[in-house]
Image (cartoon, rainbow, N blue to C red):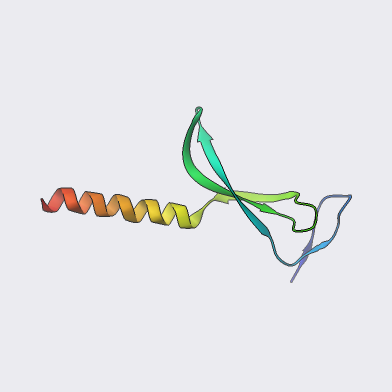
Length: 72
């Protein structure tokens, strides 16, 4: 089920999204990786979120480091 782009100059059906990586900044420091969800026709931003792949990779790395510290 496709929605329509909210951009008044576009209004195209959006059946897929363009995903663009962006840094997430907090207090001037980059803290996480994020993604913008864009209309494939006009590149209007339709949403933003934390990059779930980057978040998962960071969590796995951190858990591994903690296990290493505990088992030494």
